[in-house]
Image 1 (cartoon, rainbow, N blue to C red):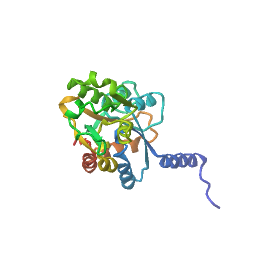
Image 2: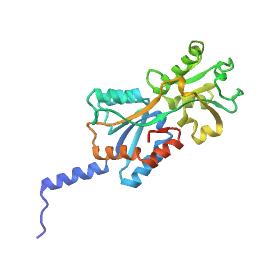
Image 3: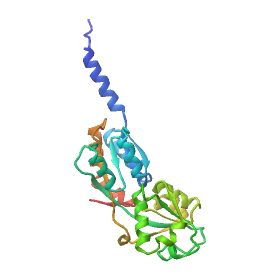
Image 4: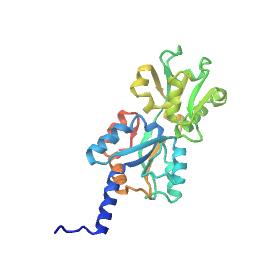
Length: 252
């Protein structure tokens, strides 16, 4: 006679199987959209864990998390937003973990009929529209405003700013010709598309506060162990090297 499997054991097995099949859910800053997909695939190949990322401005992701969005990991474009998650009691750790530093660049299309991107280009009246991310929602937007302020150009350029919801959209605005130039992330400028169609100038780092990018595992993560595993994977030497090639300064 076949032995019957206890109902409780079947329930535990079913729950375990469901958890194993549930993807790791990552809330990722928009500057990571060109960078993260191959890293997620490498993580899947190394661990068998499938991960899915949602890309938005860090402020918007923070709001979603505080409203109960079911993410497992939060990768922000600065340390301030994950710290808010920590302060709200929604993180699994007492402080965010730095995983990279972002770089602000000035980018223009090659067919824009403008001089090459430089600090002098920001003073050029031919730049009628300058794309930046929303400084109230995106760390790169705050960095752009800080850089323009440091140069004494913010008030003069303010009427010409085209403000995007996040840094990815800011790059789209200038890439599509809806802006003449853009203060965007180096991660966006190094994508094959934008490398082919434009050129960039690295804004001096002393013009804006460091864009220290930080991560937290969320307290109510469905896949807590996998989330911790992913964060360690992100901080590993090979992946940090990959971040460097994609436009982020590694922390290790």
